[in-house]
Image 1 (cartoon, rainbow, N blue to C red):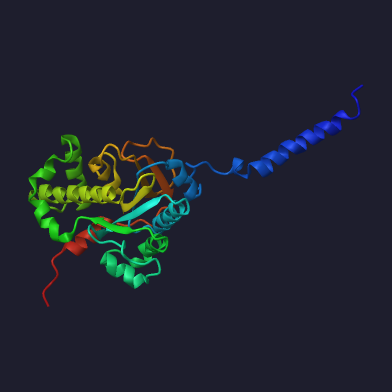
Image 2 (spheres, rainbow, N blue to C red):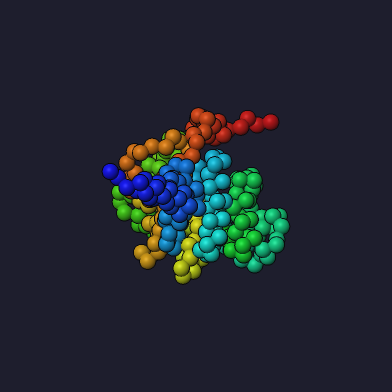
Amino acid sequence: MRPPHRPARASRLLFSLLAVATFAGCGAFAPGADAPDAPIARRVDALQPVGALLLGEQHDAPEHHTIERETVEALVARGHLAALALEMAEEGRSTAHVAPTATEAQVQAALDWSDKAWPWASYGPAVMVAVRAGVPVVGANLPRARMKDAMADVSLDAQLNGEAYAAQQDAVRDGHCGMLPESQIVPMTRIQVGRDRAMAQAIVKARRPGQTVLLIAGAGHVMRTLGVPQHLPDEVKVASVRLMAAPATTATVTGDFDKTWFTPPLPEKDYCAEFKRQSRPQPKA
């Protein structure tokens, strides 16, 4: 016959195991860093340590701007954010000399912000988290005043290998919905390469040992095979993340990005139809 005290011991053991699971590991049942619903802070932690974290957004996806703000918050909370670099502001613009208590208008002036091109309501929250933390926000895009020179700069043709350069030309064609004259493909590709190189240079200038420079840019700019990573020194460890407004999928991830973070799909929109409409000559008054 089983001794009467053993069931009580077994019950105590079961209770102990449940207590361990409950109190020592509430996160045991939490989603992993790669789960679509994992907190952004956990996903950011899983990518560390890196010298540059590149977030590639879809510009009109509201959820992407939320992720960007949460990424800034996560890096600030850990003291890891060296600088916030932006495609949305030109190289040479910076909040380095702006006080953490500055108004949003003062920050926009320091960055020479174009609200028409980049709605401040979308990007301002992430920018202001960095400013309030005393972290510099730096413009990373090629200044418009230098784009004409970039179009004629043949040295930019050699910044990518042949296959990557051809892919970049195709991306320029697709990005202009096939409406760009073939004679403009090379000059416009040079601008794209020049912009990627400028963003890489901004990251290098903002680096600090043991910390991360966060770049926010369009997804095409953070592609490992074509974009900013191609222009960074080998010693800079990079994590490239694509933010994608589409149903989460387990499809094989290509080498273009290290991670893809999915957000809810947006309503279908014919971007090329809108581009063609905007490109039509306007009738004279």
